[in-house]
Length: 192
Image 1 (tube, rainbow, N blue to C red):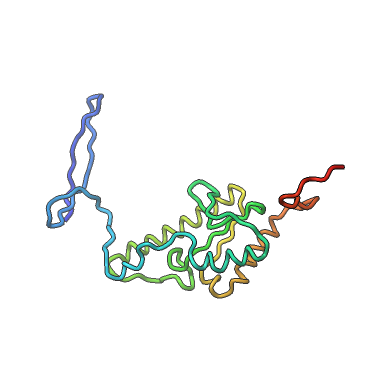
Image 2: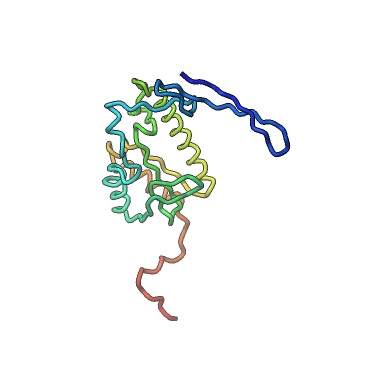
């Protein structure tokens, strides 16, 4: 049961401001809370605790190794815009790569279509919020001058070669013509 209360607070100018707060009666007495729905812990939810946010198996074991084998060098977990961190970036080509997990980012093929259980509406809202954040991050990264490549986890598992080709193609498209090859690392420039 939720009990809404209102109290008035006087400001320094003598005017009153009404504030509304929610108190929740959970059978153990009244406690301050919000009217937002809260997550319910279930037996099946235990496997979701402690999930990694980066260095996940598809990202590390397959895609990053394949990109490295092509000779493309990258940096991990770099911020490409405000509140937008790519899984890895190829700074030489201004390419940001995001690896989206099928469950968490709502893959149209493998993502969950419906949710069951006490947290069903919360899961639906979470996946929608993740999709909105993905669109926002892509737009912000592109506005900051990055070319964005988004790869689904299932694409990597199905054919890592095709996934790495999408990264390589983007690097080729953004590559600027170079007049002279870059100096070899560790060598000294020659004198004329």
